[in-house]
Length: 281
Image (cartoon, rainbow, N blue to C red; front, side, top):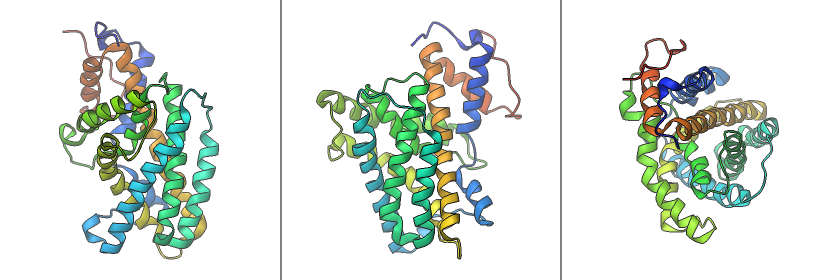
C-alpha cells in the first residue's frame, strides 16, 4: 500500500475506474433488475414470507456459502484462473432453469451450485485486478462480495454504504484469514469461519429472498428462471468488479485517501459525471 500518495495525484484512468466502482457499488440492488424480468416489483421482506420459506432461504443460504468455500475457494490455492465470464453465466443459467421449473423446492439444490459458480467467477475478477489468490485474506474478500448488495434509495451512505459494510465485516474477515493462514486450509466448521459466514449470510439471504420471489412468479418456467440466474450472477460480478477495483486503488494510493474520494464521488448530486480528483489540502 502507498499511503504517501494521495488521490490528488490519481491518474485519469484510475479516477475513472474509481468512478465506475462507485456506480457499481452504490445502487438500488438486485430487485430492480429482477422486476424488469418478471414485470412486477420484487421486494421481499423476510418477515412477510411464510415461516417455511424463511427457514428454506436461511438454510440454503448458509449451505451455499459453506459449499462455495469448500469447493470454489479451497481449490484455488496456487492455481491460475482463466477469465470464464461467459461460461460462468451459462452454468448459472442452467441451474436457474431448474429453479424456474421447480420453484422453492429446488432452492436447497440450485442455490449452492449457483453460489459456487459465482464464487469462482468472483475469484477470476479478483485476480484480474491484481489480487493474489494464495493470500487467505484475498480469498475471503471474494466471499465478502456476497454481502455488498447496494443501499436502498434514501438511505444514508454513512449507514449502509460500501465502506460501512466493509467495516462491519472487517473483524470477521481478519479473524477468519488468520485462522486459514495458520492451517493452510479453509474449514467451514471453525468458529472464526462460521462467524464470517453468518455475517455474510445475513445480507446475502436478503438478495436470495428477492431471487426466490422472482422465481415464484406464476408461469415463469425454466426460461425465466435461467434469465433470473443470469441477472443474479451479473449482479455479483459487477459488485466484485467494483470491490476489487477499490482494493487495487487502495494498494496504490492508500485506504484513507481512496475512501475519502469514493465518498466524495458517491455524495455528488450527479453520479454519472466524472468528477476530477479533489485538490490536495
